[in-house]
Image (spheres, rainbow, N blue to C red):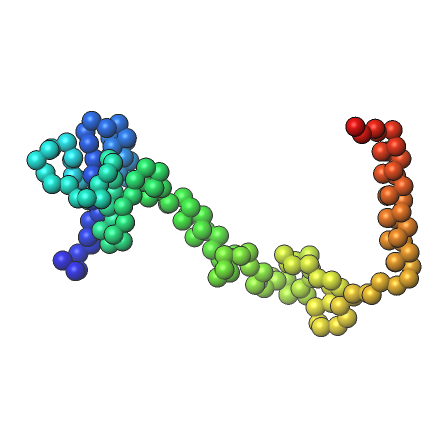
Length: 163
């Protein structure tokens, strides 16, 4: 049996609406051959100790029990998600981040507007970074702006009385 795929087991009841819905999901996806179905309505069969509710799916290979929402997550087709991933896969790097590894078709130089990254100085050849240390004029401008903002806030709060 090692060469064959082991089938997962679905425990269900014909008296349970959710069980019926799960069986319909499996049938609609033509996945009937992937499962062994066991109806718990027969009191003469011996049920496993892990079975507490129906429906329950036992994943044989993973030795995992699925109930409630995890059943629907497992059965929900991931086809559309996979198609989108396959279609856009060339644009993503191995970490699923958007890739900027590309060649320009017109052999133009790489510019920051052609990339998802922003460059400090558009100089991609390793030249100056364009970072300046704050000088006295920048410090004064920042201080002046802060003082103006503080004064405006004071004016706005002058008429408010707190209890």
